[in-house]
Image (tube, each protein chain N blue to C red):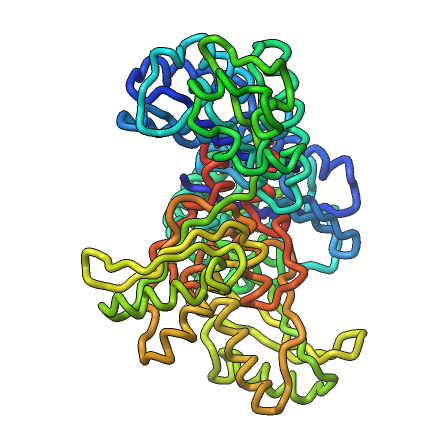
Length: 300
Length: 300
């Protein structure tokens, strides 16, 4: 069973009726579960989260992109967030590590359809990138719609993977991608020693030579506790259990223990299955042994 | 969302057409997921596993019990397993600890319906028991149908909770219950020292003064490894992580490490959520933060 999460971002966060139309288009596809909708007026942007199998998820994403193209005119859009499309980005995220290939394939097929049926140029980014210049979304998008209108096709980073090198007059362009789920994970220390949290953050984060796929900063919470706040960009490489162990050891050296940790938002069940591997030594344990996963299989 | 597992046992394991009729009755109820069917010819008994919410699960269980009563005649049944009903036992198992109350209520309502509509006397057992004599299924059932026919109503243990004190002429009686899920969990040691596994099993099991809700024996596997084989009867009281820690400490004293552990069969996701609490210190983490659980909520 291939279950894929899709989290498109639309350049509309002020007109609820437009966001409603988009989410209705998603919810209208059978076997797609709409999980979340968040609109931000300052950014004038909305993020929609839905989950489904390859076929339904691609259909739902297509209908959302088509609806956004019909209702959003970038020439009239302003907001704090950089954007170059009515649907600005549309990433597919695997719920299990081995499903990345299906996400990349889904992104590629959707790109072709959006370009040919909606005449919107598509850039394939991150794991779905076909050229190295397209891996980084920020490099593709640059300063957004107004710039892209001028420079599209001028260099590899600005040349779409599907469709003509010409932005859609009102819907701009769209970045469709595949990426690994990011886990927002914080560890709160049983101390108010901010310097300790900051030192541990520096020691464990990748950019300072620490653990791979870990971004970390030290903070102090309102209740006074020092916190190591992290983004884990690939839990297969460095898991929540790995960072807990690394932080616990460093804190213990300073005579401090972990007060508690927190998962911010959602995570795939795969993270928990891997926790059974590492913490229980249950190396052959699979998601098919989780009762709820089996129920899900019978329903989807 | 209250998701309940139902695992009725039927006194038929040799006529596949009868088992098929029973599972068809279950599968015919909308929003019930049929997960497993296992028939054993020696025991002449079948175990059916399905999952759903309170209403659908009770309806599916009722239809299965009715179908079994129509097709199975205990006067013609023989098999190695003790039994006193066409449907012999029908336990409801909560997928989350806090849902036990819903299981008990479901068992009680189903008992009333089975007694009044099918004229089959019902005993409510384990957590659904209304009298202490009915907690233990083995005590209620005794030597089975032929004995129960004679002694029903003669003492509290043999007096049904719903229906007349008279067995159904062909379908006998049925034990409907609510119980906590049992986890079959084995830890394999990196040694062929059977005596060590047996000693650890004795030390950690409840009946010899060890950890509560743990049954354990020491075995040697075909590949030579010594194994501590366990049933965890309440993972809230003693979790897989607890027994791994207890076994690892005792093995380490003998210079032995854990090779791997194994979960036999299925377990509720709740076990994994609690693993995040204990191993990651993520004390506020809930199943609602698991993506797949959220998808399940939108489908059921």
